[in-house]
Length: 111
Length: 110
Image 1 (spheres, rainbow over the protein chains, first blue to last red):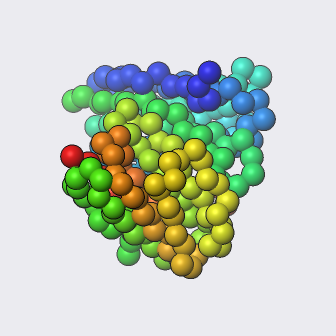
Image 2: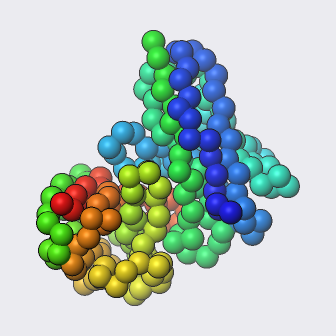
């Protein structure tokens, strides 16, 4: 069973649309959760951490459901510059080397 | 000012050759990593070092040998390159909950 699963997409949406990505993880001992963004031929960069109470950063909202072991990312009012691959990342404790990356969900925002 | 820098960015080499990728971070982090991202875009950890000591060594062929001369540097040496080694190799460093990646080294074995 894959440890972190995401719908690979691509999600093709028009500008201004709201889009949501889900991610499931298999290890119930997982302790911290993140969304990273990776542009084409670039390195992954931290987009936001995901907290149990849910958190928002501008147009981005992340939520965590520990009981169901899934994480979500909601992007409102999509911009062309949001086009990228979004990686769900789970840390099941210990050093940062225990980060498990999902394969990513590709988003393409069209004019 | 590049936080995590790795060289070379692009490398094309023949099967059987030995090559190295260098990595340096100027963030003062204690922990450094090597990740591999294959053609299917799956990002997987290879090695983790904390203050020059090996912490994580995932199931990686022993043709891959990391070396950390000091906590700001983590180099990756690959012996007897194979076609399947073609991938993007990302160096990274961290303190706390955030990992900072280098720009990646695109390795193509022909």
